Image (cartoon, rainbow, N blue to C red):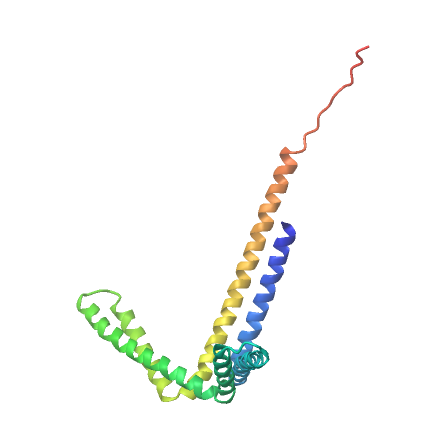
Length: 202
């Protein structure tokens, strides 16, 4: 059991380190990391498509589904590798529209809440305005926003790694404290000296 727990600890430390390094890279080099990620994803799609096509050609029983899926995967991978910035811009544009529309709806709802004299209306207005501004920025300049979005993801990963490391240390310290208490209890109640005297029955 202790061996399993030690392996889990090692795995947790590795995950924390990888998350922290990836977050720092996303913050420091958002454009490069975006390109590397797109190339990795596109390359994986292309490789899967090529393998499917090879399987279709070499197989005695020709499956049209394998052929179609292989072509779609290969073409999609190539498109992702070549036009990843345009694809990301479309994604950011869609997110911007979603934020803009959602912010407008929330702003209208906040005025309705203020009419009901609810104390949360001010916070709702602030969040709605922030959503509207972010949506307009995303729509107006999707190329610039995608780098900021990548950096935001990087910040989130770093924060996750730090909080996970703190939780890991707290759990480890708590486990050591419990183990120490159990050891003290065993030493106090488990070891009892007994004096005895041998009696000769003869």
